[in-house]
Image (tube, rainbow, N blue to C red; front, side):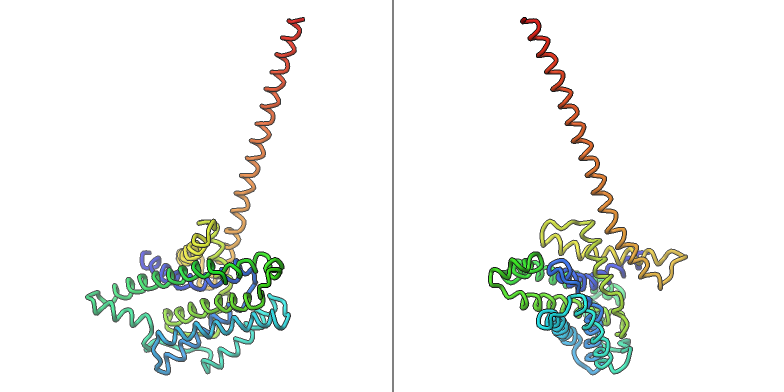
Length: 330
């Protein structure tokens, strides 16, 4: 059980970077970007292919970041310059990336079992400081991925508070208003989608090295996982500030992986039920807060009616006492 939870936290921290990218596109820009399913695999394909050809794993992972940025920018250009519907532009880019990913890998699957990756390097560093192999792998990954997720969170918080970040937030809230201030909304959308998919591709590169393979189909449903992390995190931790919202995204990604990991330990559930579990979690995260708010609103209205009834009764009693006093005076 402890091993399963530890593994879920490790993968949750890696997927949290992808979830931060989804948060940028869906929540900040209000752009339904389905490029995520393709750019996630692109990051994995680029990193895996370069590692197999002897490139340093850290350099390969960083290069995946830039390739993902380019993919996101292409989606933005399809929408802004090509005047394509936001949803359709993401779908078109996702389809195009499927073939591009096959071209990059040269086949449908690239194994990394005997290759030096970011995580094997971290394990080697751990053993050098005196930890055994298992502890170096577990605690090395936990510590490094925690720091990395927090680094991306800090960057997101900082960027969204800069002049450019505030303009992107305004574009997502009210593009007509920001255009009236002579802001280039097309450039802001392209930049926002580029940053979003850069994070997604970076996460894909890490997931490929964590699982020791890159597969052309590993990105299917990735947008749902990202949305599940965002929605669950917002429902549990809240979104009063940008810093709290990004922290809730990371918490939501970890919670999602833990719940899935524990759910798959139930006997009647199988690995193929992951998508069903994800759908149920998203439905609960969407419906339960709505029901809670409805109950709170109902209680508030009932309390208001009771207060109004008590005030009316008190007024009637007061008026009755005043009438009696007037009659006595007469």
